Length: 199
Ligand SMILES: [Cu+2]
Image 1 (cartoon, rainbow, N blue to C red):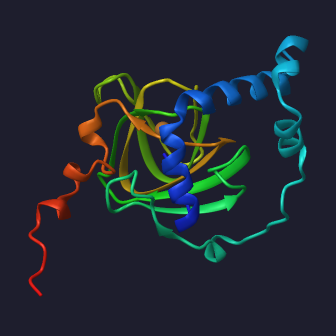
Image 2: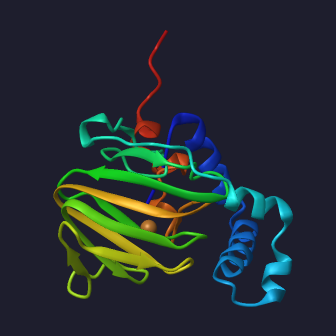
Image 3: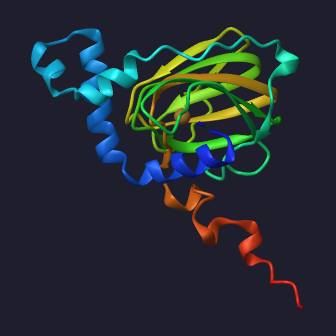
């Protein structure tokens, strides 16, 4: 669900174009970390290992010190985001938060990496599949948690002002099941239908 500072947002969006590659890389490094097999570990390049093992940058913040910004243009207008740790556009662990207004919907989508979601406040109704099905979905209140494996199609709906924390291994990207739901597609943007101002 998620992204980022301006520069990071661009990188994450471009990462969406290289989903297969990112998926492969992530798959091998994720398996390497859990020590599944030595073969998998051998596939992990030295560079990836160095990045994965690099120490995190120290950070401590009160809730009021978190700096919010508009969510990336991969999301419909109205959501805000804050990257708390790491850089979702590159390899390595990241933590971000997303703030959504009441009724905000993230249409069915998937990510090239696993997504860990913790509800901080409000309510998030989540479900899996290619269509939103509120009866089959589950509503998570503050303290609720979900893991969405990479590639799994899922969706989310906020009830009340809602903040969620998203953690995972980058590069993080979002692909909508239905391209018509992707606000990055020029024709889906409301402003694209407005005439250009006369000069
Ligand atoms: Cu998601």
